[in-house]
Structure formats: C-alpha cells, structure tokens
Length: 289
Image 1 (spheres, rainbow, N blue to C red):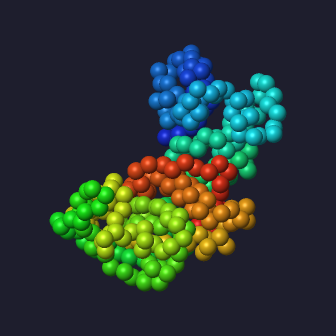
Image 2: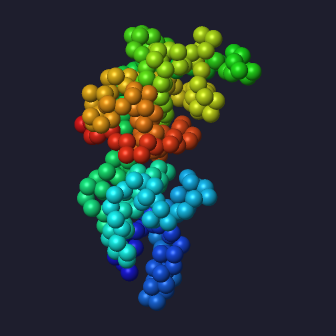
Image 3: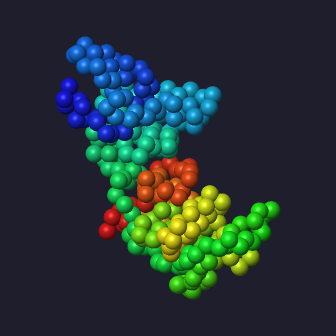
C-alpha cells in the first residue's frame, strides 16, 4: 500500500469512467485495512466527464471516442494496457482540456513523450520562445479614455523596439512579463499588420478588460514596468516541425497560443481562460534549448 501512495500522491491522473474504476481500487484498499480513498492520494480527471462536456448529448464510450479521433487501431476487449494506450491517444487527439500534469507511467514511451510536450512544470522565458522586447508598460493613471462605451484608465508605455512595434507584421505571438521578468500572459495577433495595431486605441494602451485589470493592479502597486515581447509566425516557422510550419500562419498562431497557455498555465496567471487546443498540434523541442 505504501507503493500505491508513492505512485499517486501529489499526481494528477486521468481515467475513463473514473467512478467505476476507483470503486474497485477503493474496495481493495478497504480490504487491506486502509481508510484512504484513491482521490485522497491524488487528483483524478475523468475522461468520460471531459468528453460529455466537450460533446454534449453524444456517446462518451472509449470505442466511440476512438472512432471520433480517427484512430485506426482496432480495440481488443479486456486488454488493460491497450486501453490505456488508446485512451492516451484519444486524450491527445480529442479531449483537449488536460490537467496541469498528467501521470501515465504505463503508456508506451513515444506516447508519454508526446504528452510531456503538452504539459510541463518547466518555466518558460520569452527568450526561449525566440521573442524580443517591444514595449514597457511604465505606469497607470486615474485619467480615462472612452472606448466601446466604457471609460478605461490610461496605461503609459515606452517603446523599446520601434521596428518590432510598428514594422514586424502578424500573425504573431506576444508575451507580457511582470517586474520580475516572469511570463504572466501569452496572446496572439492574427491580423497581417504590426503589434501596434493590437495594443493601441486612441493613442493609449488597450487590452482585454480582465487582463488590463491585472496590469493596472501591478502598476498601481508600484510593481512595474511590465514588458511586452513578441515574435512573428514567419520567424517561428523555421523553428517548428515541418508538419506545423506548412500550415496557414493564422492557424499556427492559434495553435501555438492554445498549446503554450495549456502547457504553462500555472505560470500564466493573467491568462484567465484556456483556448481550445488544435488536435495533434505540437511545436517540437526548440524552446528546450
């Protein structure tokens, strides 16, 4: 029983129809004289629940999800190892709301490696992503500007890279770091013009309301400046796998934003929602270097 605790404690694992499987495990634990339940030892994500929320009203059986995923492997009944391997493939291709760190020790090495690319505890820096500094958000004011029927407080900024601010065109990815240089936000700009057009309205800094509030809170507390970084999809293409770099630039920007937010979501405190992952989308290993 001690080995089971070491195996799952602190981990987040996923099961298909978790309530069914955990019932058997809990029963065995009780028979062994233990009072704990599996969910007391680690977090559990149920892929049936994920599938039902992703595809409401549709069948959430493993066979149905294998078919929906387009997997060619024929499932043999009562093969636990094969079911685990197929579930990992289904999870990668179809059920794109992963827990922060997936525990799958029984999967084949190549499947486990692919999963590790979508979830990692490693922190990321803008330099690892190939980004360059663009502007700094230097201060906040009580004065407001009026935009889309709302009065929004003014955020002051300073341009540190004029070329990247007004000349390097999208689609592109950008990041915002806090005063400690930690990446706290990742976003995309899919229009074929420069980052300036994404960030400026009425000659002042504009952004989504929730994220602007984070910026304002940091600046109001004297925790500035905040730094905006960016890289264009054209610049990223030479770093990405050939299967991805051949995609349309807008689709690459969408795929990378969702993948990066999912992968580093515990670091990205100012991203308030997960974007929908592109099934099978991977960015290679360039950011490890």
